[in-house]
Image (cartoon, rainbow, N blue to C red; front, top):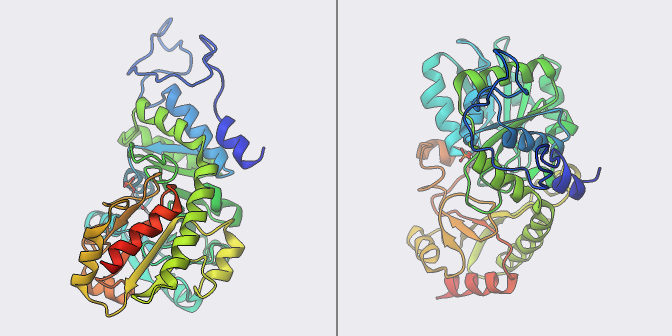
Length: 380
Ligand SMILES: *Cc1c(COP(=O)(O)O)cnc(C)c1O
């Protein structure tokens, strides 16, 4: 099946009890057994729930994966993944990553004896030097948040695989519509489903997708043993959200392209970070490993004045100032004080994140209204 057909049909069967075309919200904690141990495959909703099963199968199909596992949030998915490891194990990660991922790595799992190294994954020699006998996982995001750097999934995954190291890709920014890391050699895909997959800023959820049966069994064990599962109502909302993923993503990409070009030509705007611009250093690689360039972009104002950036962010009328991304409505974020505040300023600056950077999640409104809003906010 092709992508749009999968987005609408994969994983979803008419409900066996009534024929309902939409998977019902199975709002139940337990299931009645005919005799002890004799049941229909469902015993308790932490372990299995039919609404969640449908969603997990749908999400797996979108990433061309055998297995999909859903969690109460993106970070709960990351938490479950880190529980695969033991004290002394090392994880090598990109130095340009989501602030909450940095926080769970350094402020939670370092206390349990895991070791983390943050490096520039665009430098193959640095990656080789970072890997040791103890390295168990390579963690990357591409495009990265918030600087939209592009990392080469195929070559990084091959480098890790040759040393028996698992490659995990946080595919939140691209969504499965634009990029399928498993097809490029990665072992596990992680999503904050909260973002493009949900698509309507109404649910917090995470997911892991993978092909390896043994690893999936271990992760399902951890899902049930540790319990960070999403509720059936949220699963229903995401099942509904992904039915329009492909048409939403097309419009996000088209609007972001026009917004990026507008900003790039504006005399008051300095650097624009969007992989769709021919001048972006990752443009050629993005064109190769992604189907389009996405709905996220960041920019700096000329003069690099913090007060001026705050003024612009406070003047928007259509863009809303808030954390998160990937919903149908346009959002603007100040990474230094919002999504990335948990990363120390020195680390932020090392990775090139200035305190004046403004990040946009370009929504699917009429792009003329978005450009008018940017014009009035920047020029007022
Ligand atoms: C939001 C986000 C996360 C965390 O997901 P939650 O659903 O908020 O827990 C992880 N990675 C990226 C790239 C994100 O944008």
